[in-house]
Image (cartoon, rainbow, N blue to C red; front, side, top):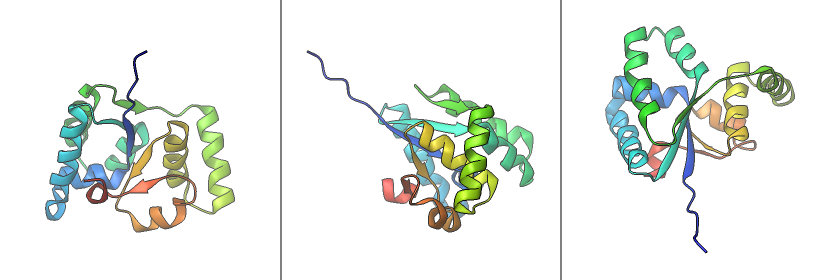
Amino acid sequence: MSIVKSRLRLYLNTDVILSLLTNESGKGENVAKLLYQAADGKYQVLVSEHTAYELLRLGVPMEYVNQVLRPLLLLNGSDVLVANSDIMRSAERTMRQYEMPFMRALHVVFAQRNNSLVLTRDIDFTNSARALVGIMTPEDLL
């Protein structure tokens, strides 16, 4: 009987992707290290389509968004998650029940539905979502 080894699923929050783009205080290097480990099969990386929207809303040029998201799609087992009506309704319930912004609730629901750990450095996200989903910083995981 063979043993199937599952990989830890990492849902990358928008701030983590942004640090990769800006290499904020060297924090982007830590994210890059995790992505190299994912390429070696240690992790499965997940991002949502809403991450791209948030990056664009923050003023990141489309070519930079594409530059960072395209390689993520090439990682073995990585995926860009797309919301459907069920995800949106669940995020709306989470938003109301836990009094958090809708986009934060959407990230929580994506992570929950995909049994993944959220990678973020956003203290507000951590404080409001810790009871709902596993959360770590890239530095904690390294």
